[in-house]
Amino acid sequence: MSRVTVSIDPHVHSEGSYDGHEPVELILEHAAEIGLDAVVITDHDVIRESKRAAEIASEYGLIGIPGVEVSTAHGHLLAIGVDRMPPRSRPYAETVRKIHEQGGVAVVPHPFQRSRHGVRQRNIPTPGSADEAADGNRNPERDADRADPVAETGGVETSGAVDEVDAIEVFNAWLFTGYRNRRARRFAAEHGYPGIAASDAHHLQYVGRAFTELGIEGRESPDEVTADDVLTAIRRGTTTVDGRGAPIRMAAKHYVGAAGRRSAYYARTGAVRGVRATKRTAVDGAVAAKVAALQSVHRTRRLLSWFA
Image (tube, rainbow, N blue to C red; front, side, top):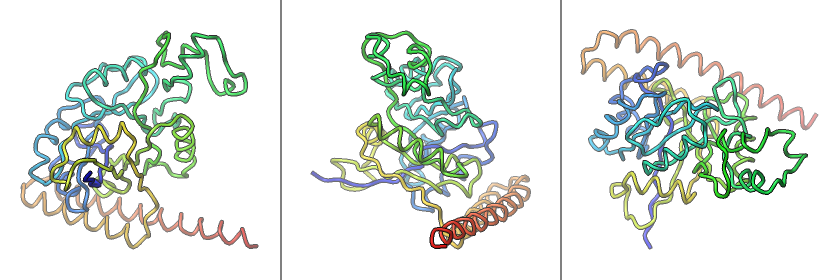
């Protein structure tokens, strides 16, 4: 059977989000230029710009996939492949169910990082939590990091099967130390969840800094791949994450490319804010390059300390 691999960044914010900065046209242009096959706009609790991006993605040679980052009662949740906004502030497990009713996939973003509204481990619905709630069989040692069985299912009492999430974001490019990413990988492996990587970009130059490769069965080329194919691949777990720290030279090239595309875009559209946006990109790039340099020095010192 034929098989093709596509690269997607499934967690990106546009100017439609309260904390985003870029128009979707510019994000799509940038994604195509850096070699992605799809980018999912997941603005916070609004889906309008994401739906528009999905509609025009083919104009940039990309797969159109709508999505949204939902604020649940227990933390954020990515709804990928939905065209309607799930209800806000509802229990986690209920929101997962609503996403599945639309045919979408539910992905846990930046798990366990409470400063960024990541969900706690005890609130992620898993099969074991429902079984324990029904049978009364609990593991005291493991439960030291968990709450009562009802909280395990996102605040919804259940018996029998739980509507689980479809994947865990095991590499989020915005996590500074990597500890939470490692913990997310361990959790995904323990429960058999597919892992995805995403940039969680709020600025253009970060789009694609982490991405997920998906193996798509029955397709000859990326041009044949549909949004449904991508959702199926996530559910099946034919994913490979790519989120390794880029060398400083590569990162600098990424920033410069983003600045150039941003300048060209605003020159074409004649937007007044283009000058301010380009300056902001340059400042952000300089700061990011400085951080990358400091991280590189820190890693080198740690490596040398092993041989001291």
